Structures are given as C-alpha cells and as structure tokens.
Length: 339
Ligand code: NAD
Ligand code: WQD
Image 1 (cartoon, protein in one colour):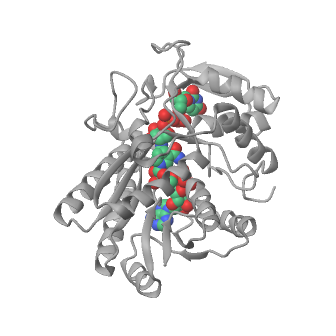
Image 2: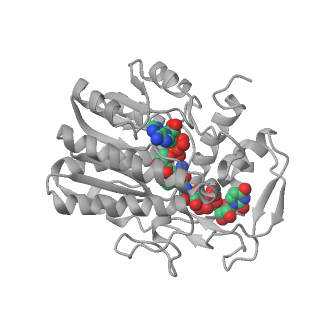
C-alpha cells in the first residue's frame, strides 16, 4: 500500500514525505510544482535512502487522478496541495477558489470513484476568524475569514463535513494548523518562498541572512503585551508528527475529526525577532509600519483535544524553531535554486 501526498514537494509536504519514508511507508507525490522545486524531493530521497514517485500534475486533472489511483494501491491521501498567499488571494479570488476548492472536489470525486475514503486535509486556524478570547479550541464555531484564501479553507472543511455525513465510509481529519515555522534539523529541507515572503519568520530569516534590508513590523499598537501581533508558532517537524498520529486515528474511526495543531503558546513579533537574533547571532533591523489589513491581534491554540485523542503534543521550543530555520537559511541562502 502507498500513501498519496498532494503538494508533497512543498514546504510542509516535503517534511511529511521524509517522515513517512522514515516510518517505512511507500509514498507517491502529486505536485504541479507551482510553488515548489523537485529538488526538495531529491534531498528527501538522499536523506531517507528511499525513493519517492513524483507525479508532476494537478489535483484538478481528473483523468490523471483516475490513472494514478488505478496504477497504485493507495490507502490514504494527505492533501497539502493548495495556494496559500493571503494577499494574492485577495487579488485573484477565482484562482484561489479554483485551485483550493475545485481542486479538492476533483480529488475527492476521484478518491470516491477509486474507493479510497481516508483523507487528511491541511486546514488552518484562519477558519476561526476573529476570536475574542484565547486560547482557541475546536468546539468554537468557525468564523468569517477575512480573505479568499481563508474562505477557501472553510468551504473545503464544510464540503468534507457534508461528504462524511452523506457516506459513513469516509474518514477525514481536518487539521487546523496555527503558524508553521522551522525546518528539518539537518538544514537540508525548509521553506523556500517564491517571492517576497508573506509570513513573519521567513521574512526575518531573509533579513538576517542579508537578502532583505529591514523587517517591517505591521503595527505596534495592538492590545497585546508589547503592542505587536501574537501568534502560535509551531515547528514543522511537530506538525508532521501530528499528521502521523491523525492518520493512525482516522484508520480506527470514520467520520470527520477536527484537531488544532499548535503549541498553546503565543509569541509576539518582537519576541520572534529577539529569538531569531539569539539563534543566528545576526541583527534583524526593523521599522514599525502600519497594521496589515485583515490581521488579528492575537491567536493561539488550545491543543488539549489533540493531546487527549491523538496522544500528540508539540515538543520543540521557540529557540529550536529559530535555530532550525537559521540552519536551513544559512546553508541555502537562495533556497533550492543555486546561487
Ligand atoms: P507550499 O506552497 O510550500 O506547498 C503547497 C504545494 O502544493 C506546493 O508544492 C505547490 O506546488 C502544490 N500545489 C499547489 N496547487 C496545486 C495543484 N493544483 N495541484 C498540485 N499541486 C499543487 O505550502 P505549505 O506551507 O507547505 O502548505 C501546505 C498546505 O498547508 C497548504 O494547503 C496550505 O494552505 C496549508 N497551510 C499552510 C500554512 C502555512 O503557514 N504554511 C498554515 C495553514 C495551512
Ligand atoms: C505573523 C505576525 C503579522 C510579516 C498567515 C495566514 C494564515 C496562515 C499562516 C497559511 C502578524 C506580523 C508578518 C511581516 C510582520 N497561512 N508580521 N511583518 O498572519 O498569523 O497567518 O500565515 O496558510 O492563514 O493569514 O502569519 O507570519 O503572516 O504573521 O510584522 O513582514 O507577524 O502582522 O502579527 P499570520 P504571518
């Protein structure tokens, strides 16, 4: 049996593929390489000493999916493929709904036709919208995401809930990630943003390595201890371990299961800058800029449900998250593309 990882050449997916191989699974990756390089999987193969089948293609391509499912004996689908740039989703909503929503519909239709009904979906804490009190637990109603990217995640969650209601044979995990950061401890694979990074940690890391001059801190007047935004940063390797536990859990029970994957601890932008400076030994110059539209003041998880039901907790602390990010950045200043 094999596991299909959509988006497996990307940031989180490549760490997942490595871990699956290390756990003895056979892995097939479906990725259109729209935001990734096959170099990530070449390195994963080198690190694991095992081979990955990479199918270069799109989750919206039904004939390709049908061929893939008939050519391989697949037990589970881990579905990471999607577009994730919030700002771009505001400019190109159709592109986002087509890729993330239609893509997932096509994937599920092909899975159903092939009789494969075990799915782990990469959702996001963004589906909670703006929440008044922290921490955020899964029983809270979903809110109103402030952008098309977030809405695409919420729509897919709702579609998958309806699907499992209609057919009890589906086993689905909706994993709501908080803020994934860090890289594999080897420094061989990590996050490689295509353009200017949208997210804080890759931006800080590119400033520290000298690719960018200065970090713009989006607002220092929030009602938070130091005025900057607070988030729940989680190491990508902890996130991956959460997926392994979720996969085991949905093999035992059907229906939809929702789990937050976060640490339960919030850090401010300034705390991230300080931690990164300590990890890298480099200065991270910053300027205060206006708030970014759509940003919330604070957001962190209540991870108790995942601990109780999956036996999973995030183990890696902030200093490790920053050290691993730095090791990846300094060893690969231009990411996967040669300098
Ligand atoms: P990423 O962009 O590095 O990985 C996504 C991968 O999907 C890329 O390799 C891309 O080439 C591929 N892809 C995109 N559209 C595709 C399509 N139509 N067909 C086939 N492949 C396609 O992003 P990531 O950070 O690894 O995120 C993985 C998943 O987790 C995404 O669904 C993302 O929305 C979700 N997520 C990410 C974060 C985060 O902060 N990184 C937070 C919450 C949720
Ligand atoms: C973190 C904090 C910013 C950049 C986004 C998406 C969410 C999910 C994860 C997934 C905030 C501040 C940032 C910068 C800054 N995406 N910041 N200067 O906003 O929690 O979540 O990524 O797929 O859906 O919305 O993460 O890393 O962008 O920001 O001051 O250059 O850093 O204002 O307080 P966010 P982030």
